[in-house]
Length: 417
Ligand SMILES: Cc1cc2nc3c(=O)[nH]c(=O)nc-3n(C[C@H](O)[C@H](O)[C@H](O)COP(=O)(O)OP(=O)(O)OC[C@H]3O[C@@H](n4cnc5c(N)ncnc54)[C@H](O)[C@@H]3O)c2cc1C
Image 1 (tube, rainbow, N blue to C red):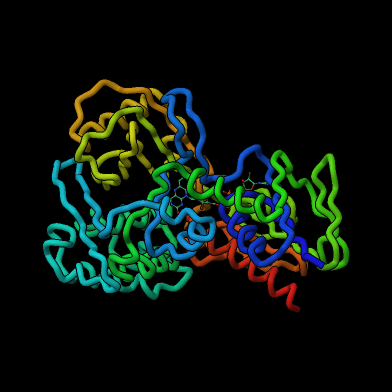
Image 2 (cartoon, rainbow, N blue to C red):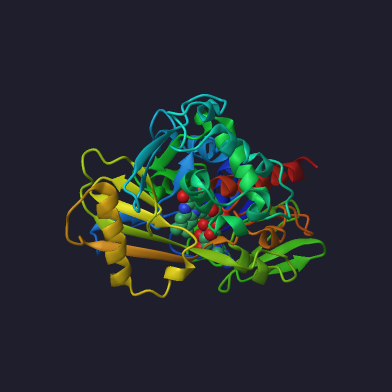
């Protein structure tokens, strides 16, 4: 008989588990509380700009092997686009200085030996001083591990770790920062090519997964919020959705791929991260200048990354709780001023949209990192997935895809047992 698995939550973690298990021959049922799949990684039509935009500009790197494998498994790897070499142009808005970090396309970080390719005004010793991050103990902060000042910090380490951890780097977990450095900078340019879902997050990472699942006979129910588990002995016996209840057979499995707050309320006593940080994205309907790079790192201003899409310039600001209460119009004006400087534009404020995701990621501090549970639970047929589970990475698409894979592997192991 075909084994059945219920996936609760259709974010990237739930979808990656669902696709893997559908491909392994499981009868898959996906239950999503909202009317749209994708969770924190989704696109929607925005009336203010008259464009389809993403809830956030999501940057992947070519070394995000699970995320790229997930895209491959749903047939959209080619939809993740980026330059052939890992080149990152930067501008400093305070000084007007521009430079390009060129990590090349090799497997070793040889660029640190080449003055023309590394960050201007930095020397080899600055890079060697980052080594303690690579083997940092999990309880340490970045600020206890490396010197968080100086040119290399301001121009590379701070932007990279701020984007990856979504906290001010000195307070961030050195263990998580180390994982990021090991899997990106230390793995050479081949692992650092920036990749963007240029046609939109939903078109590249979400809708094709739904189509593939449906094609495999899976069911996807939207507006189907899990309210409660019915327990039977040491396993899940029922899924209670309010209006309806689904019985879970002895060989069936459940993957809970919801955010930590939802998981904690469904499973009282589960330890989860409890603090979160915001990310602000702003989108402007404006044709990018012809020579505008797809991604521009920005330091010395409010804006941190500037993305150029067809008909649109978009920016990202991480660790953005300080901007949550600011009037939207004022924020849009300030951001547009930064964009004009960064892109060399002179223009009035074009149609815009600001998306403030309050709980974009869990707070990647050592304390919150210590609260992340593994994928197995004390219920033998229940497994956890999500960027907040103990993936060893900060809250990222890579972590989500990895967690979905791991939960799927445990379901597969249960079938074999
Ligand atoms: C603005 C922003 C920018 C980001 N930028 C990047 C980036 O540049 N690079 C990167 O790698 N990552 C980035 N991230 C992080 C990335 O989006 C997340 O790590 C990833 O999308 C999380 O996926 P997930 O499946 O773990 O969780 P979620 O996306 O939160 O999915 C959980 C799903 O469960 C559903 N759900 C909740 N409760 C229930 C219930 N009771 N029953 C049924 N369904 C339920 C939710 O509706 C949701 O669809 C960013 C995030 C944000 C918000």
